[in-house]
Figure (cartoon, rainbow, N blue to C red):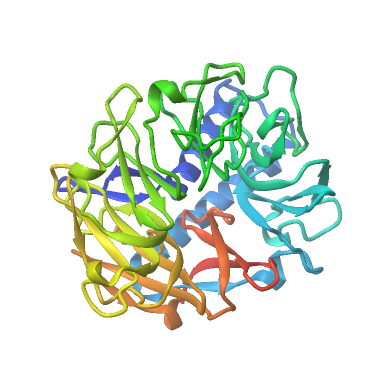
Length: 455
């Protein structure tokens, strides 16, 4: 997941998580696309909509100022029963997305039943009336294949999000694109299919590799197999979007040979050349750093730029923790081999960017000392300093950033305790400029929703 620079003062750039930035960027993009034609007379039916948008904007700005001004009083409020459907919804994966062109982020999730296909569940955001809560605000689409991973992006640049799916392996490959008709119906479009995607691919990242403002795709997995059934020497596939929903396979040109074992990816421009670099998370071994050479080709610079640490990593994310203008990393693990631990039972650590592209391990006892599964970095309270949410098998760990590698652990104060969660998604669902959270409970796959509030 990428990070981007936002200038907040004349002294230093600060970083926020791309999930927040992409939401703001896409909102801006949608607004521009709607207002590109100058309209001087509005039909009567448009006036209530404009009034709603203006009122929402004013309220949102007020709430945003309130959270930033009272950052110490920020917290997350559980609004599951008020916003989500009354009947229990079981979801194996979920994302915030722009399903239609109405204001507000919607939800898309999926459920797969082995050998019986999958259900794609779409819940429309109706503001204070909830998300998919009332009649006519939810849809279910059935597909005859199993979905293993789902993400969204505007592939055809029509202002709404399309679906990119990693599926069970078929003779046509292990991934599909479903385009959005603009009203929340997803369909296969002739000519919008992907090149053959190898079996055992587990995830896909959307990133603009060639800087042409459309989405390119990077597929990875723990043990990617080639068409002949042998271990693929590159352990990933790179597809460039050539426009018109046509993708070209360029893996051999852009992606290096890699060992198997990739369980996650984290993407950011860490060396400040304007192009994305990739940190690869390995489930048992040395994590790896792929540097973009400036024209989209990645080189494995692990031996030169990363410290040698053998661990069972689970996730990683980028942010500027010391506020010096470059991206650092936070890595979560199940286990770190004892010889690489900085203290007893260390399971999470930072990697500090020295400003010249090299990373040094930076331990911190503020990080949890239990096996951790996921990390999410965000500016929850509007201070411009990254905060962290870390998931582990006993629940959630909430760290408020103080700057210069300092954190205050405020889980009980900021976040109501819940059952352990398998994953989280972020999105500004009420238009106040701050990220709200959706979690999927590990025990039953039920979603829970929290709004970003100030006391």
